[in-house]
Length: 140
Image (cartoon, rainbow, N blue to C red):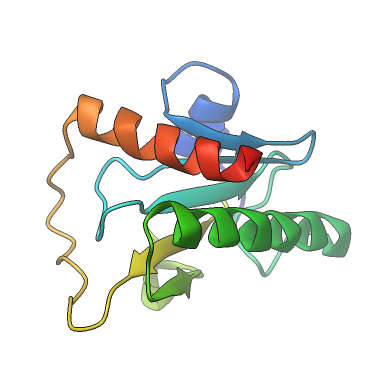
């Protein structure tokens, strides 16, 4: 399978679609998932073109997972979460929907299940507030 330059995350990286940025380096961008499965659900994507983990360059994977750790720590702190779920899907059969490599970081709380993936978008102001909480934790 080939990389599609018109996928939604490529458009976000090019600035063609908006997002609530949480964290950015020269290699990665982290932003709020607009259809979160839990409060504080963040997506982290490499800036390099990669359909998924199967075709990503090792150095890009290293930068991606450095960011997963940084954002994961801040997200857990920002939401006083009991833990985190880290998810990464590859190809349709593996659950991948957007074909640009990405990692989900979802704060988790004892006894609270993940919301089902219904396709319902979260309110913009709620996402903005979540992003601000995480950015504040990153600065602390």
